[in-house]
Amino acid sequence: MTNIVRETANKNIKTIHHLGDVTKAEIAYGKKRYRIERQEKVFVIDPNMHTAEWITCAPYDNHFVYLLPSNIEGWFAMCTCGGPAVITGYNAYRKDASPTDTGKMLLCYHHANSGKHADGSS
Image (cartoon, rainbow, N blue to C red; front, side):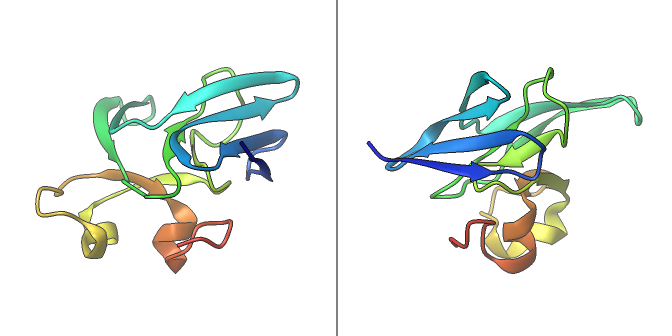
């Protein structure tokens, strides 16, 4: 199986993709490796707003978004393409939404802005 290593927006983190397997990946932070898996929804706690809620993750074919492990410094969520992930309201993703999507969604920042992931894939 071929491994692709890609630098992410976070310092010292590399995402390793296993071609043909878009449900699991490994991230390397320093000398440690963390296994991440695709989730349909993630639980996000916002201490500044005193809120906590389940957020749906964008269903990309070739990448997925995930929350960083709590002991890794940096942006709270990433996409396996190497770009940051952001939470948006329905208006930001309605063109890609299914009829059941109506609330907030965690999606790749690069894909939301340009229609392509940070690695150039769509």
